[in-house]
Image (cartoon, rainbow, N blue to C red; front, side, top):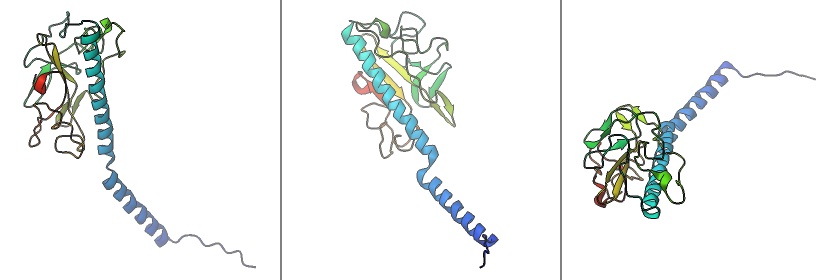
Length: 205
């Protein structure tokens, strides 16, 4: 009775390895992990903007809150002024948002954080424990990713901005949120579009 065992030949192993390499390449090209991660970060940005908009709106309506630019620091509501979640001087080409804030306490909700609104004074308590920050909150490639805030303390309106990262959510993408949000930073032909939410008419602070 023969008990001969036959192993793989070198050629068979090379063929299998070649097939696996082709499948791996196809997977990377089709799924594009980098874009999937960017989409996840953009989803977080969209969620954070919605949460923060709701928190500030609640402050304005439930507690009679009227101070949108805080009582500490040098931030003042007005055109071309902004506060950001990035603790350095930041900006985006073609966009008027730029600001420098202290790193210490930048996520505080008592008016001393990067959004200078005292959410802690909301009648029912602050709806959020800390201010959100951009998932990157810094420079990546040639882009700056940070959250920005501007306000009109006379009209009691405000605007929040975020820079989308993925091809899917950026201006001109399949699920474009930058050129469809009703704001004024909505160009699909250059790189100045932003995701804008808030209560300011035209979102043009």
